[in-house]
Length: 430
Figure 1: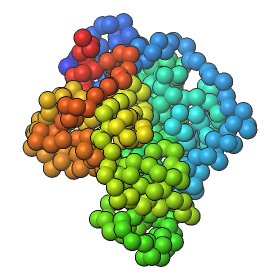
Figure 2: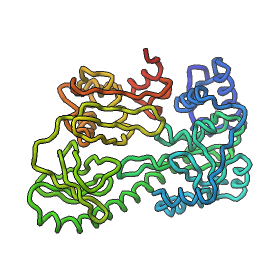
Figure 3: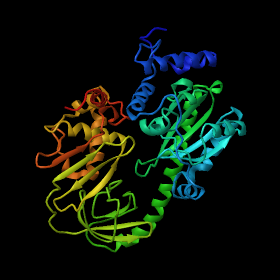
């Protein structure tokens, strides 16, 4: 290997674990010392190390945050949708983890350990590392790891030995995959398999990712069942109404409509209450509660002036939002998916507009992927309505757009692999 090659986990896994650990330790030491490493770390690891240096994480000693109390732990479990899919995760992973001398760990979106199960010997070793129930394993707290790093980059990650930023974790291998809520794309947490470094196998990454997707599919099934229940209640109500109306669940998913085309989902404010509300896709609506949802009745009157201010918040590592203010909108906020956070950030940097091929180049490095771009723009318009113009795609000139960025450019949308975003992470804001 030479310094122009990049570490490959499949190749590392064929080495003796001690030799592989020494190689990775040399890569880490060189990176921390600002020297040329014998081989390059994987991009996901290199970028994580860069965030750790910016966050001031100590590479030599671990930091242990306060554990959640028993009451706090139980409250988080009760409030988490992950509770409903724990049987899926247990059935698929616990026996595998126990046999492979691993443990299964499930954390919430903040990196707090809510469940741990698996090999009893490994559980005791995890206790000595502070890898306990209620512990905080966010990347900014304990460095690069198989829980905190997937939470940031929003994709499965395997971290082997000295790829962990903190030296005390080098005896471990960790593989984690994020779990998102199919109703709104909200990050729910991470399922992780961890164990001694000599038990690492590259196939574990595919296994954990598959199980995470299986858990998301179970959540999707439950959501469809709930929508069917709402539809059975709403359909007779809508049949008696004149004019335009729609029945939605609390996440904006449509159960039934009358007088308007069916749309899968509408953007709703975080706090919806009975009364009157302006929505970009419908205008002014009378809002009435239904069992497990809401009835939105479109009021047949002139719509208010278009909102005049958009605030795009991409300052966080895991959650991003767009807020619309002014012009009769009343003010509302919509949490963004990773893809929509990328898209709206890129549009905010091109106020004169960007063509579909230009956005495809920015997002994928391939100007031919215009079909994907147009599909995502269509989804964004479901909650931003006329706030996105086209030919080219842009925010209208009479709309003020404010962007809240992270303190350091390197922390901009760390999940993103879009070429234009990666370039923005390298170049400081003027």
